Image (tube, rainbow, N blue to C red; front, side, top):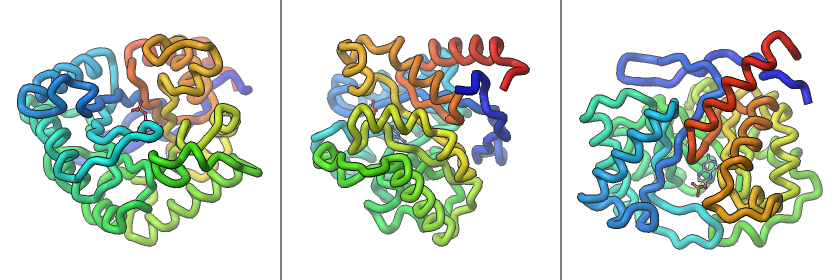
Length: 289
Ligand code: PMM
């Protein structure tokens, strides 16, 4: 591995005052507003808890908050668009009303949810189906000029772990993402608004996830910022035998290797440690590579 961060241009994220430049790697803090994440699942009282959690992520140094109202864990049950909107939109509105200017991302595969979140002040749509679940998703993102994250997965979160046979996982993920980028551009989305994501843990075995992180340079070669979401995932637990609530060192290691291999955005539960690790790694690799 070249022990230095690949040089990358600033990433532009649209905001109320025009495009805002960010120097990669960026850290995206995860805010899950599902019933199991806050006691009352994003209903009125839960908004305060979710806003406090977002404040803590920002105070720890998160550049972006990714807000999700539907669990995409293997086997998770589907939720309706109305439920997802009720969980996420009040949180986005509350953050904007309090003057939070950081980019906000909505983690959804439904255009109706994305539309409501964009109306409330989100700037990024994070779609784990890369716009394949809902035909209205690409046209919506084209019309709104938001950033769209295109992630690789096979099947749905319900059945994806039964679809893990790959003759060439890196080639398949690269070709899939390249095709989704072209589909998004054909739908009218500006190329520089598209981020790509190998989908760590989505329809993949631990060896596939590791191989993909090791090959992130190949994906970065497609010319779009690469997002990596490895934080706390089961592959990390399988490597060290640690439970989900005790995988911070594993998550930091995955994030650092990802950044050194060309990831531009790291989606993590603990932005503070990730930011600090990146500062040290950057200082120690300056001038090399
Ligand atoms: N992982 C999860 C949810 N959303 N979005 C993107 N773009 N990439 C990911 O890897 C990703 C995602 C599931 O992780 P969580 O349950 O810890 O939020």
